[in-house]
Image (tube, rainbow, N blue to C red; front, side, top):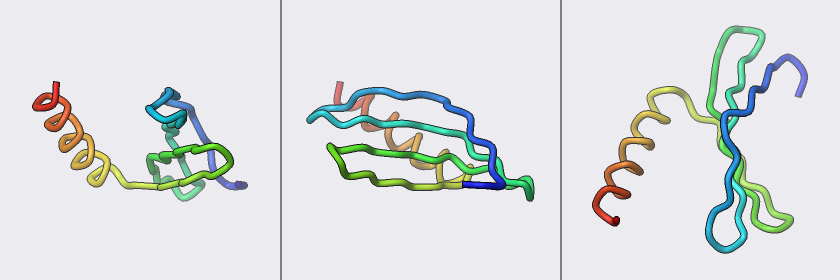
Length: 69
């Protein structure tokens, strides 16, 4: 997309042949979002989340991972 700068943060494989990509996206306005792309075969799910949403989601994921394993 035009008007945005995308910086790759991470890319990794997940179970069931899924691929997850995390990108920092900075718009011309200065707004920054975390873009989460989940690829499942030919299907893509793309989520753009703000910092507070990413922090809450990350905390929930870390808590789950700690308890699960």
